[in-house]
Amino acid sequence: MPDIPVGSVIESALQWLIDNAGPLFDVVSAMLLFCVNSAYEVLAAPPPLVLIGIFAALAGVVLRGVGMAAFTVAAFLLVDGMQLWSQTVQTLAVVVIAAAIAIAVGVPIGVLAASSARTSRAVRPVLDFMQTLPVFVYLVPAVFFFGIGVVPGIVATTVFAVPPAVRLTELGIRQVDTEMVEAAHAFGARRKQVLRDVQLPLAVPSIMAGVNQVIMLALSMVVVAGLVGAEGLGGVVVQGVMQLNIGTAFEGGIAVVILAIFLDRVTGSLGTRRKQRFRLPRLRPSRPQPSPQPQPEERAPQPATV
Image (cartoon, rainbow, N blue to C red; front, side):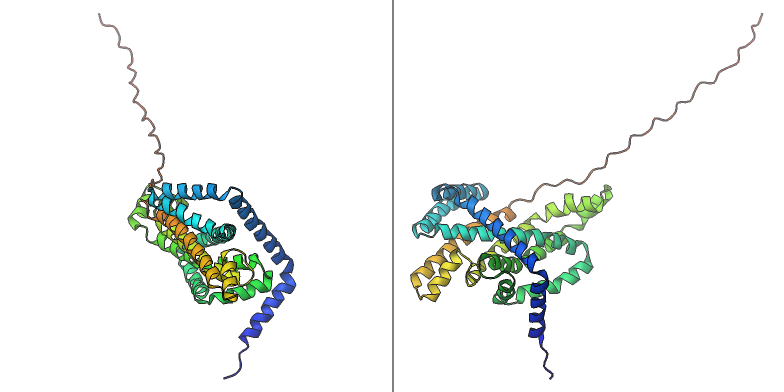
């Protein structure tokens, strides 16, 4: 077999991108760094006990019970007691930014794939490639483009977390009952109205399941992103592994598990709650025009008789 230099071609393409689009990557890096720093400042502004109370209240309202709220308080107090609160907030900021970008990119692509069979056929092999590619491979071009730090971790996490948002959004829209869609068309709704008022509300549970999977995949990349200099709990775990410090590695892992359980329960319950009410688009019926009334015929005056 002849030698096929696939790696050399990819390396040449990446080098060409850096030589010709270097300022663009600098702008993207600055924007991502600003977003994650802003998210961290917002999350780190209140004292830990106040933020723990907010998390517990959110869990209690969403799950409609005190069990998860009590677990949230106890678990995050444990994180604070292990002196890992700052790293946990840093990890949460990275996960929020990466998941927000992945959802903003994946959900519209899923809507397009659900409405067009050609788009679905074109997107499917790309998603298969993204999901089966080893996670460490994402770090190589990310470091090549953005250097060492938190930005390549965000980029790799975002790319790794996009496929579930696309797939579950498309699946949710395609599983909407065809009778509902036909009824909306019978009422005179247009294609955009059917999507906005019928398909998307009924696909909310599937879309929220995609959001849940995006967040879980983003958390699974935390430790991997720590290998390229991303701060947070991933850095703690990597430091414990590199120094053969079992206690430090376990503490970082426990904090990751606590954060994952909290985010999974909160976002998962949003998708399993009752389906949102939706309404079929109504058209205003045209008012019937009053039919003209027949005018009485005018009779000629009769001559007077004697």
